[in-house]
Image 1: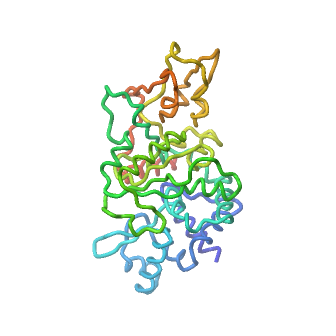
Image 2: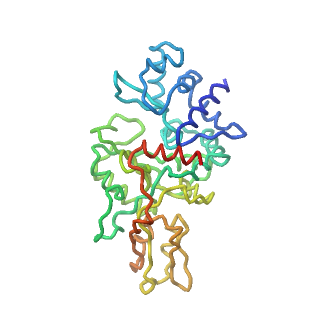
Image 3: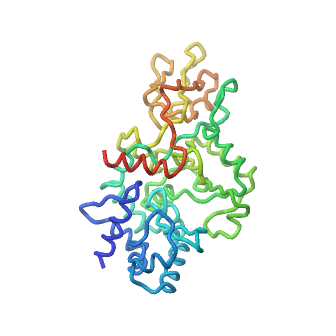
Length: 352
């Protein structure tokens, strides 16, 4: 039985996101927890490109009807994706992170949470060192200066306004850390889903449907809690907005626990301080998840190299001594436009 999970692990590692092996084999225990042997065997024949059940069945040497039933069960468990394809319903493999792991809110238990923690610490955190990053920071919108042109994908409201459906679910990262006794005090229910399809989450068991106004309020609440807005590291096709903390978030922990500056991509902004206005109150210190702020002689200073441009320090400053400044064009790393472009760049990054 272990061999089929080894085969599936290798197939998942071919996805640009990565699914590296460990000496202990803990990643195989994760797969066995989620996939039945029959489902694993089918998933071994799949890729991130959509395929019809007939095509997958032929590769697996299985009956098409039986394969279709297996595929539908895997979709229900959040292990793969399904969508309209040429010739009917098509199915595709999705990554471990960001992918089927985040869809396991209903299934995660203490055993699964500990398996993930072991895997993360043994090897998976190394996937946070590869460029382009899985996530990118979106600045808090009210911190962006009004007198400058901002690219649409730098505003969270762009995605909220363009969507036709909005939803929220528990943050899997905080759920996982809580289950192993390392939970933080931040709210659970603030991982946001968005869709271009109307009423997309109305019948979902995992995602609570929201109005647009409720979705915007969640972003405001995240600012009040000191959480970093982040999302998929592409310009188009964004379907979620996370509100992250360095104490629990699997992405930000790559930076806070292991020092990887590639764990998340920066926004197009960085914070600066007006020393004449700074009172040295230290209100900004705890808000910075990136350890970019220091207080010396009762004046705060910003380490630009460590600033990821989230804006959390700006919204908490009582004297308005902090503000956001847009980077010069030469300092901005272009964000991949599409998921396909990101995958190509990521695959090259893993080769390096």
